[in-house]
Amino acid sequence: MTEDFTPDRPATTLPGPIRQIGYIVDDIDAALAAWVALGVGPWFVMRGIPIRATYRGEKCATTISMALANSGEMQLELIQQEDDTPSVYTEFLQAHGPGYHQLAYWTEDFDATMASIREAGWPIVWLGDEDVGTRFAYVEPPNSPAQVIEIMENNEITAGMGKFVRDAAVDWDGRDPIRVLGG
Image (cartoon, rainbow, N blue to C red; front, side, top):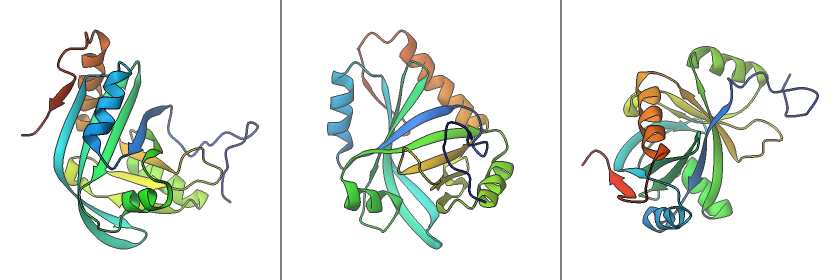
């Protein structure tokens, strides 16, 4: 039976609180400028990240740029796909244009969470491998307030990056708003 989001029946399939809000953009630099103008930062940008995933049952390889920042305890993510390969990102852009895409949950037990999602009957539309150091998936629960829900393995890399980004935002004074990682 598929679980849904209703006040009298919480979605027990999802692990803990929402940890991140993700946006798909077609111009990451313009999106960064808009967020910085709102006082959010600093942003940590990674460009040219190769991603291998399974997209709606088919193998997919693409390249993205992404940026992370925190506003309080909430992490924000911007993703720009750098090519036209069919993917969860191009699907969203074609249907909606740039904007709010996903809510992310971080799980201590990725395999158990994914088993629960499969048991609930939620479609898994994007399943990433460990190229980026952690496993992740985008799923489509019914009645979701987001296009997809991301499930991210909360391993040492995820936790370390989360703390690094959050700590940088705590006393950020507006200087050095865009910080490039990895090159």
